[in-house]
Length: 349
Ligand code: ADP
Ligand code: MG
Image 1 (cartoon, rainbow, N blue to C red):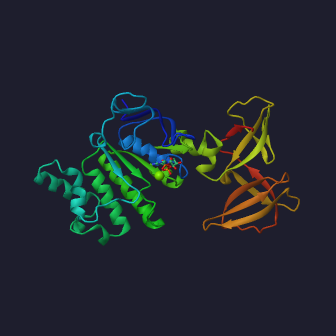
Image 2: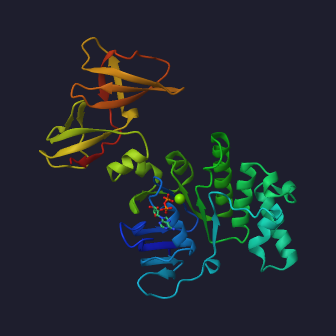
Image 3: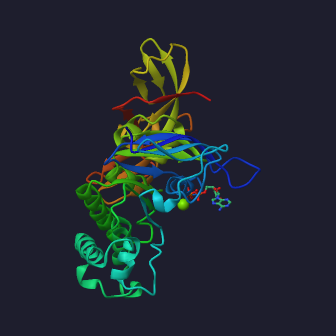
């Protein structure tokens, strides 16, 4: 039985216009980490609030371990948030400023006897490496430390499910990567099932077992990171999870013919069909040629690699990422070549 199931959940805040979350369905197994990925306003926070019980669905069901937590359309009364065994880490940490770190973490343990509560607080502060800071107040800690307190506070009551809303977005890049690793380690070592929200695809790919991509309240795709990257279900997913160019292609009995090469047809599309082929920058190489049909329009130095933007005879563009050991100049004529590890096509518009 899945730990969490959302079944066709819809939630709108206003009568007019499309709902914030529409017809959302997915299931999460015990111990899994799900990353919900999508642009600002796509419904990520609303989804977490529905699961935590801060919002009630207009339609559909939220089910935890087989028990209906909430359902739309005049069904059973929703189970209140404090009875759902769900921990939440908010984007701004929301620590209590007038309480010490220790008391912040103890907050969700009010029902435990004093002894046991103290033991648990120490145990969890040890786990996040903050035992020595337990008497301090939030403003006496760095951003990364506050973030860890927020995680500790949410984990202290040993919730069945932990929800984290853009937990790393207030940290700078270095600390962010470090915290991401630390938090993952804590989740894995405690076997905690978790959903974390992000608009950063790298973050989602690094931590999660499953990535769900949301657009305008709808779940476009959910699956393992590799599937989302190599086999995106829609053009929106393809572009959101990595750089991608799209070229028109014609399906023939020899394969899919495009301006930069003929590719296999593993999806068995019908000959004669017009498609759009996804090209990732790591699929494209090129060789400098005086009579090359393409031209280097721009180059972007990225450190370990250089990203080239190639102009094709049709006026379309593809990008190619190359090691920065060899550099080519803007304006050079080149012959592009594409080797697609995975051929992904969409019906032409
Ligand atoms: P995300 O977290 O992905 O940025 P949200 O779930 O916060 O997205 O918001 C989804 C949509 O719902 C947005 O269009 C947002 O403006 C709207 N929305 C969110 N909260 C409220 C609210 N309390 N009242 C009205 N509209 C809201
Ligand atoms: Mg949000």
